[in-house]
Image (cartoon, rainbow, N blue to C red):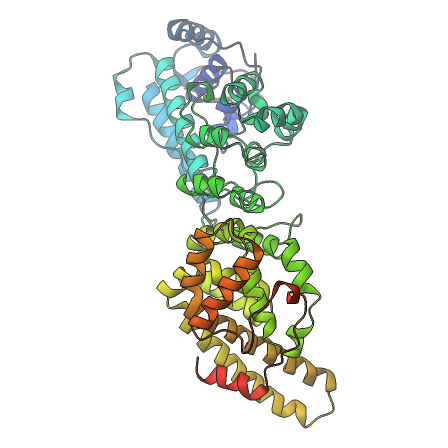
Length: 500
């Protein structure tokens, strides 16, 4: 049933609606959202799978409503079509509809940025000209647009989340049932529940980001591959977008980084996921890369927290803190965290800038994790020299600021400058260690994933000594992992800085 309101729809628009009705999907009626003529109330009929039946049914209803394919005029307030003014071929109506949709978007918002969710609709494919049935022509054209939108929305970066509230509600109604299926990573059971509750999984011809988010959270690799590829006939040509932001403000790679799932991250990257997308919105910390998520979560590992967070030697300028940090990162338990960081860093364009931000902010532990994990990338990018140059320039700037502070009475500012200088000296020592011994340390980490802690500490100490970057005096013992009192004099710090 159609309820018409002025101005009346064109025959082409009515044909679109009738074909959409036969397809049994109201979303099909929204393919031309800028057309006011299409904003009509339609009660979808049951899906007609037989093409001939569809054609006959649509043509019969079309003739009943508007007679032959023609355009109409109406008086203001009229709700029924009047006498035809001129005959218009249905292929011309479709082309005009496509052109008007594109032109209206351009005219109404000429300065708006391109919206990958609502790209300009394509013109009918030339192969459709061979069809003699107007309704079949419209049906094929709508399928063309459906496939076009499904591909555009699954391959572009989509921000913000366009999932409807109704779809969100329906999804959370089956959340527990779906979680059970995903924990077993059963493709057959996933497809079964997908076909039964399609409206809970799909919105706008694309599998919703919350669906992919739950799949990643459950580390269901087989189901993730299924929805990212979208090749199964039971998905009806719809797939998931690895660059579609969730309603919470993060992307699929952020969720995979949270779980430290190297296999899931590699799967997402193979399907086009971008490691350069940042979190956004008021429901999350903004500006975080997937790389940040992995590094910050690594910093919360028990070994690092217990041995480093309470250690005040870092603030005193004790470089043994640096050696302790390097030893801890080489433990077998840290390998999965370094592997995840390395993988994401390889695909992050701003990796040198991110390292410098950590150093500048005095975050030595995150800087050490990134340095050790992504050292090969830094070598390829000449990153070590870039960091040393930035650090040197920043130290000169701090020195200049220090002259003004020392002549005044601002003790708090003076203390802050001193702490920042100590942080930069420690960072330079860390850069020197990884620059000289990083490859040997990484090789040991990759080949000794089951070594005992004592073995690791002895081997790492030997590696550092061999590359002339080890601590002076005896090797670090496991009993001494909590506190060190060996203080490197300021003169030695200067020497480290000058001879890097």
